[in-house]
Length: 151
Image (cartoon, rainbow, N blue to C red; front, side):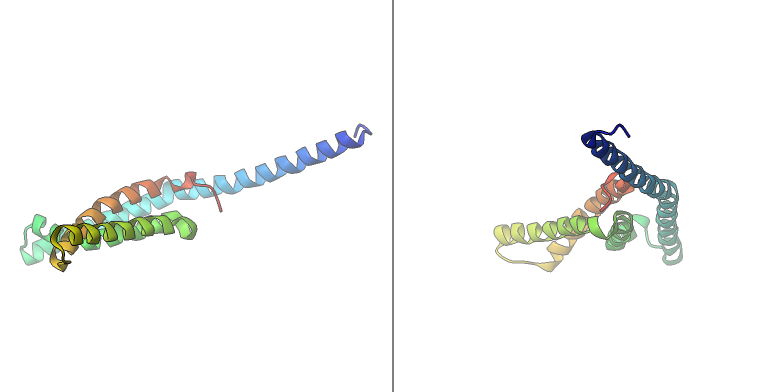
């Protein structure tokens, strides 16, 4: 060291700061490598598996695929949201759930305002339709969750 106390403390601080940054970047690198390739492949295989299962049901029951997709939209929403929440982790998963709740409350308020009643048949159709689009957006966003800060 140079002998000057101020310089010594500054050097110690810089060394400890760079060690801290290096440890954080090492953790982030491991997290990014595991998240980027393996989870995306696993998520893709799960989605393809669900689609093949849906296709098999159409072949066994002789139901048109478009009609079955309307009936099973809720299942796709739950699968996509589960995959997105798995990708996001416990800390960041509260935000998509909050958005999903806001979608439901908005539909209730709009129905109450327009029709002065809440008819579940109208509500569920609109809710699952909007939730399907929302789940697709959240899932695509969760693929890039490795860019979120580590908490």
